[in-house]
Image (cartoon, rainbow, N blue to C red; front, side):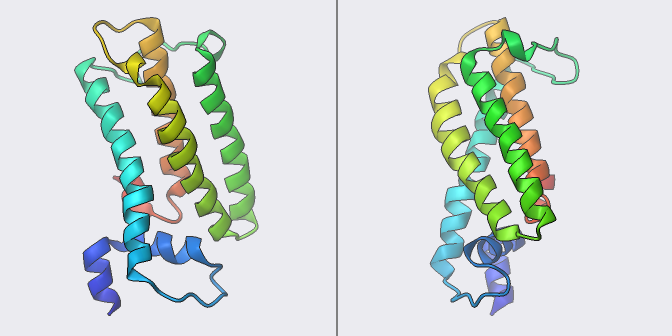
Length: 166
């Protein structure tokens, strides 16, 4: 019953599973465990990354609109790397959407969030978010992660509009 699945996992997780596991015109053998895996791996990872950012940004009262902008040239190499990967992702996802290839677009976003953002950028740079005071390095980390999360939300909105809006 699709309505039970929607109630259990949510519309966005179910939609993400359906659109990223097979092209819309291909047959898809529905697997409830697959929906749960998408919910845990992708949406869970994205939520944990956002929660990490929100926790420390709120402690330091980081306001992206009011904070002094750290130029990209002055940011550490890891910040420039993830911004570069983000810009590549934006181009690849735009091209996929323009080709009506939603499956590829979703997979690209999912790989970026799970591999590059969570497993590399946040994991390697989490000490930058800790400690007292809002140094330039910490401010650059906040600005970079904010930009990444904002742009990921915009990129995933056609597939998961409720989650990205939240």
